Length: 431
Image (cartoon, rainbow, N blue to C red):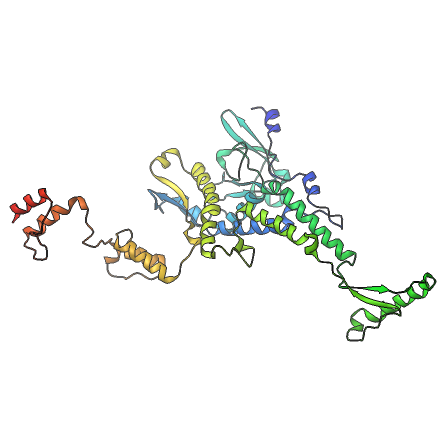
């Protein structure tokens, strides 16, 4: 693909345009409100980035943690010298959530570097390889960039050397930023906020107003003088506690204006809820009342299953695609996030669950102790073994168990008990 063609397919979804920024809310002061300044969108990005930062990513072989690898150490302990893994994942998810794309330069294996979405402004398909264009001149902090890299401000980098975490995509290459999708809701929120601001600016929020009973306009000059005197003597901190004396022929009247009448509050709430729903944020995380039809534990489980795990799979697939070879994956290696850290249970539920897994030889006692944060017993190896109760026996081999126990003279088994026909014949011969 030529540069001319690829430029038409350039990274159109990476950053909101100036037209979009102007469209989402010129307020009364004449400045614009960006997506990150819209509380519902910022809160959604904060929740998702903070949650993803809690999830550890592990290298596994045949679904068991495989620690004897530099990949495991990098994923678990340090991907970048600039920040810890938690901060890196949090920053990546913040970029991915808002702008649809997050990038990490992995050309230096000892020090991965996050690349702001503004820097990657184009892509192209060349000789069977995908490449991204790094326009370093667009980096928000060129001083730090110059410490990391040397060379021209424009360079094309193979996609194999770039971790690219994207949101929903139209072309499979670049993700669509959610702030573009939320454009209409942001406009509604900003217009409602501007209306409220105008109410305050025009004193429409005052609880009372002064009503004149004068009918003779010739007294207007004296009336205005009385009003000025009233304001001077009745308002401000110096007049707190003094009796309120109204001018002659006037009275204070209670205002009945309410935002509910204009549906401003309901409109803002509806637009806000739609934004949270778009990001998959459960109601109990942003609304004190929550969802009365579902308890918080169930909502947390739904958040983990339907919101976080799909995002987690984006990271898993990208890590495997760029860090593992096809042979590694064919031999059972994979990268998996452990989302179990997000949903915790009370001590009784945990003990019951681990107890059942020990009884059914799913885990060892030492593994259960480690999961619950309890020190294992030193000096013995019994905790390293798996156990199963004796009565747990494959039903296909039950008749052979009867024969063996009968031959050993066990008295607690009634071998004369009526058996199926083929078993009865064998029982007679055993007896």
